[in-house]
Image (cartoon, rainbow, N blue to C red; front, side):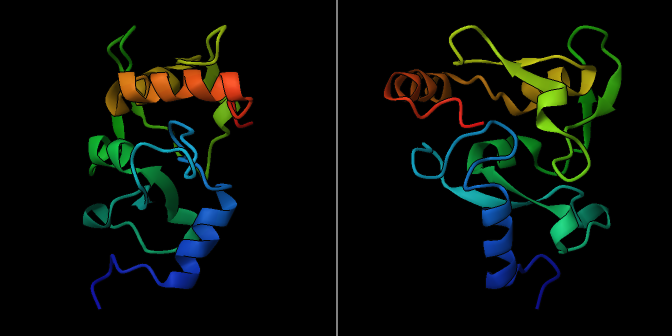
Length: 141
């Protein structure tokens, strides 16, 4: 079995722990415009293990933009900083929502770098958030 194989029970644990939403952009599985997948926070190609503490639930687009990256430049300072790590960091300490909860705002260098790299405020996601706000399903926290 390749090291990136994730057993079904472990996938379920990751899904349940994330409450069925992308741990980066907060897209909810039941409304997501992209499927949710298992992300190796520390990529297998960089020595990351397929263990619960190294796995996060991510929408396919966040996962694609992240790819094997673990750091990115803060768009304000241009300093390279770690990306948001869902197992070691608290989402609310790095991100918040704008007034109408349609866009994520980075409140730390890590938050800003993660938003910029993963493009968490891409138009389709913001449009979905707008609809979900009206329906009372967003923000999910």
